[in-house]
Image (tube, rainbow, N blue to C red; front, side, top):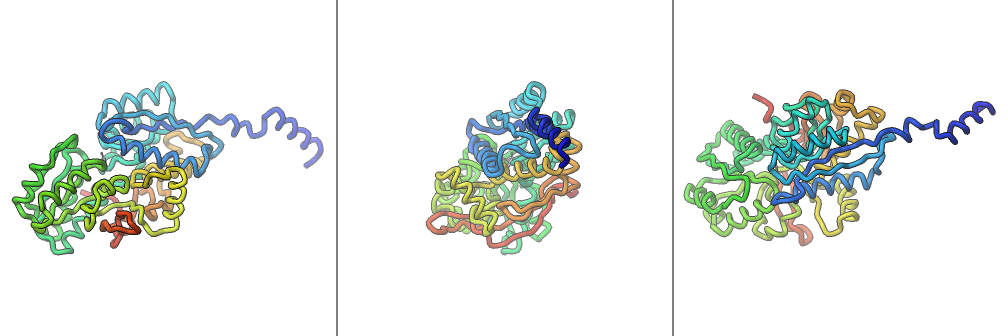
Length: 391
Ligand code: PHB
């Protein structure tokens, strides 16, 4: 460098001019809306664990912008609370990105605000298929109900089950799971003996278990949201002897999550579920993820929710790198579409057409591995798109 130029650049550096664009770039404000209290607080907590882990591993600055999390508790299935939180985050805090969304009703309630303000909205759990159609600025890093229900129905048909009862929570994801199971199972030659819906909040499973037991189908297909309900259902299924009647329990992996499987205990052994993430997933990326997770949370186990939050942050960070720090809706979305990477659950990508996630779906069986109950993957449907968006 010529002496004059050098002197100028030294002066500029001293005055803080060089790199000013970077040093003074506005913080990237992420409004994170999650259920952090009430009966479903474990859902929000695990997503938040994943978000914080990502920032711990990758730092709190991306593309020259410091990442600031603004956390709001929407208490679970309370769409008005989620919507108020989003409004306040957008208007008062001027957040650049909305993220989180443990429950479908929360995502539905906030989608119109994402659309009207052109704010990127990263869905880290809510799984009803149509969510991504409610704003062109929505991206999803979790999964859709149809995505892991169709493989479950195919597996049931292939394994000799002819007559199945569906039993689902009576709200968006339950309806999607029911619709997909019925469609795929009947297309593969199966018969649906009954379609039963249960209240999503504090259900008493006894009458439903009894109804299934009396009807004696080959299997019952279940969806309830992740949390204590799965523990109660599995115990009820064993205690009422549905297993002894030869009624198989088929479910999405929401009932055998790693955080609660110890509470279910040996009653979970042998259950077959279809899902996206298992702590036992055999890959180097997952091994490294678990090692970092253990270092930060030594007394916990990671779940699909942790991974949904972790991958959501990955999508935000990598998109920001591509846009050179720009976070406006149109620039952000154009760069996020088609993004592909290896997650702890396996290879994933963002479908450029639907902005939904494409991923492997695994069929797993609960087994004891080194003294821990694990979802051991034994079959995989690779790079599976949401079938719920097809007519
Ligand atoms: C949802 O509301 O979309 C939802 C909640 C919990 C789950 C799955 C889906 O475990």
